[in-house]
Image (cartoon, one colour):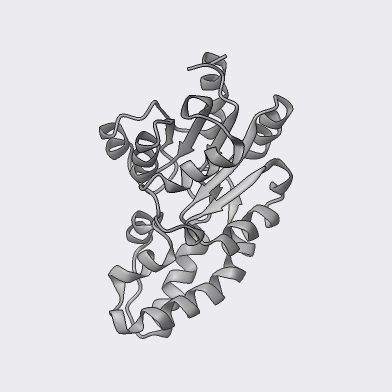
Length: 216
């Protein structure tokens, strides 16, 4: 692989730690509907498939529509207070832009919340394109979101590097023939990620710089 021209990032668990906000909104929603709270690890392990799929396993189907409304209303405010960038993210994005990489976001999170996070955490100026699953027919691990981004930039898979934190990211990258770097800062354990054999596994986002140096 030659030096990539485009770096595609997942958002939650990769660039942003939104777990405190998710957990707060999740348990607030359960409480409002009369369900018992869930522990933080159970919620964390369910993140990554969009908010509807996050809630589904924990509530009755008849309550899902109401739960989504409660969750999304609360989450809009919770994100502003409790979501933050992982250490080194902003410096990494600045460095990538200086080196003329294109940067895109591919998230199963709804567009409105993805853009809210990007704006609130002051990284909008570094992001060239955002694609979210609510605007597509399929969510990750289907590769549709990655195909869409590659098409946007008129690039081939060997010109792209994808960075995510979940098994579904590694699977989506593999299906799109894109080399995928997996971070251990998200919803899936390192053991699960290892089984999927990503291009690289790293524990801190700043280690991406070392990988990019290898590829240049």
